[in-house]
Amino acid sequence: MLEVLGLDERTSGVYEALITQQGWKASDIAAHLGVEQSDVRESLDKLAQLSLLRPSEEQPGKLRLVNPSVGLSALLARQEAELNEQHARFARIREEAARLTSQWSVAHALHGSVERLEGLDEERQRMVELSEQAETEILSFLPGGAHSFSALAAVRQRDERCLARGVRVRVVLLHSARNDRLTREYADWLLEAGADVRVCPSLPIRMVLCDGRSAMVPIDPQDDRRGAFMMAAPGVVAALSALFETVWDGAEPFGERTARYREVTSQERRLLISLRSGLTDEAISRQLGVSVRTARRMLASLMQKLDARCRFEAGYEAARRGWL
Image (cartoon, rainbow, N blue to C red; front, side, top):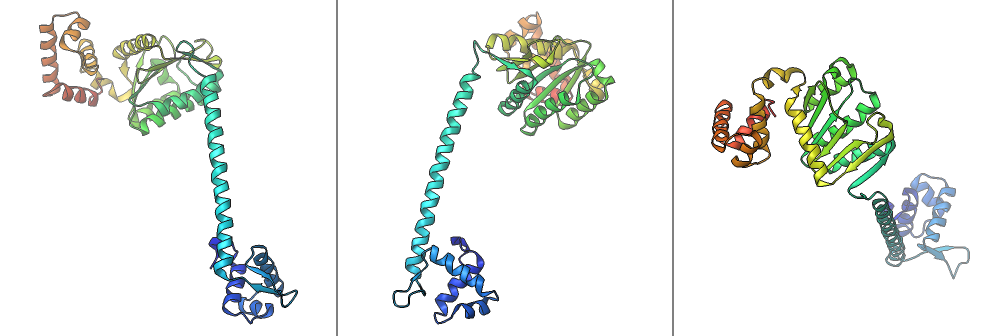
């Protein structure tokens, strides 16, 4: 059948009948196909419009079948021209989309490494984009004991996108978050999904860090509805990352991980954080305020505690136990 050429089933049947049974009249074709003669005439009109039938020169008012090698070739050429026009139109649409995207990028470019996001809608849209760009880790402070459904839905959407791609997610909440049902359910979901959640008595500001390259903080810490600043200045991001690690180091795991967390001392946690950052023994000793020899002795003791044979294995085992 010729439906692939744009002919409906009935017209395709009429056309094939004209090819195989050239002496048939409209009534014969109608009986063969089980349709009304008016339907056959309608199909004949369509075939004539497609140049698959042409008026007879010998018998005015009659239609003669055009050789399929000619008629179908013309139909194919016509459809190919339409497809080419569609491709050209798609190309123009793609160019226009690229132009508008470029304009958007210019309008939302970072000015001095700071992008101002006006209002919740713009901030949350940027958060979705941030989650799509994250490659290694998303870190966030979520101050406030109780959070609205819409706010938690927005951060959950971000976290869900990241976790689905294997991006690590670490979130710090307030102790009081345990008293709010919605926030507690969000934290439970995070743990179940594979994220790390900790709680502490106080948090300095709402904040999101992405891959150590960008940071988002509110324009007004007292009014989240005003929007946020998106910052990419390395110095600012490094300072906020250090702030996060300091708070994270002093926080305790949410829920069932508390007991395991208490198995490691504060100094050992600082040592593990230094190891994760890939610091040398000399740099670790400076951070801990001890000699290189003491830092190495502490590292050897910690690796023995973790039953690890190398630093990589120590980091893996510490993460598995919830120490990082």
